[in-house]
Length: 454
Ligand code: BES
Ligand code: MN
Ligand code: MN
Image (cartoon, rainbow, N blue to C red; front, side):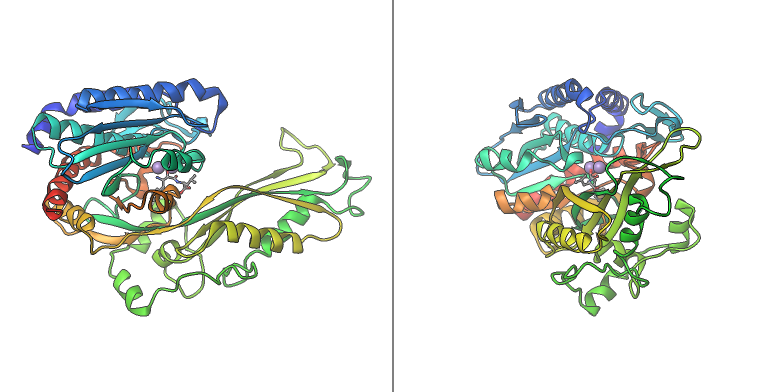
């Protein structure tokens, strides 16, 4: 019945997703503020069309949250679906083979910003809900909370949750915003990393200087910044910040051995991103480096002259954006402070340093002995014909740990993306296969979750 419904409505599902994708809901840009409302309204309408009793666009201090629900019977368990309708900026535009907000299908994949992250994945839930309503198979109550600020660190959602605890009351939060190993090796994400994201500003002289008149005699903030950054990690790719690893939850050898069973092809991994060798913290494998160990990366660095041709200038200021991915038990606020103290201690007297925290959040580990995990596992096993492997992802969805803290509800990360979907990158894509497979798998989750909660 599920397969038949999807088969009969394939084209319409895709066209409806395309309408949502065409709205450039880039949460970080002021110029797209109206698009945020348009996207929220579009999600609201799709929920009502699918069969929600009510759906509304709720104001927050930032971009609105779409809330919708269908209460079948208060005695049944309630699933809260979380997703986000906002997307990352599409730049650099010249690297896209087709315009980012004009979705098109090429070799079986939808190409567009948001095709996977998270419009494509979120929309699978709207269509799965429609399917369950139209086929009379809705086995639980369902609520939707679709936000518009995930890509900027969900600054308004914690307050929204605190203010709406009763409205959001649920037994489990269901999220599709992560990846699987592959369609042949289905997996369920059981770990997310936390995040500390900071911007640093290094100031030298009070104005840009002629690099001939002053060069060699005055410290150049870009040179100084580069030197400071190089001291943040050592020759073993260990992060040198004092106290950085103090709270890192160590994973036992037995658990590491268990995790190592998850299939991983290093040659394919390297080939897919065109690198000859992988590099990371000594004594850990690639999957461990992203799954159970923290990391530090410079995400942007600038200063001085960036325009065409040469300009002989010794800049007054240099900047960098630095992200640290954290593991369970590391607290992002504590890490922000440790970073700031350490980074400032690296500065020579020739410069002054400002450190600003841009956003952050905690990691998450999901237990696997729960009705929700078991339901997800059975659902995937039935629709993929293989039992899913639990994996820890290197990515972050900081609001997931806030949900547990504020709402007291755990999340299940039932993602259908692939690493090759190029989320946040040019030519982001989402295979049609994954989109439809997701719509087919999600109703099975509800079925087995309702059974398991009896
Ligand atoms: N959906 C991603 C996170 C993700 C992707 C987790 C794949 C696991 C696998 C989410 O939209 C995202 O991009 N999160 C940000 C964090 C945020 C605070 C900007 C990230 O991980 O950089
Ligand atoms: Mn996402
Ligand atoms: Mn994202």
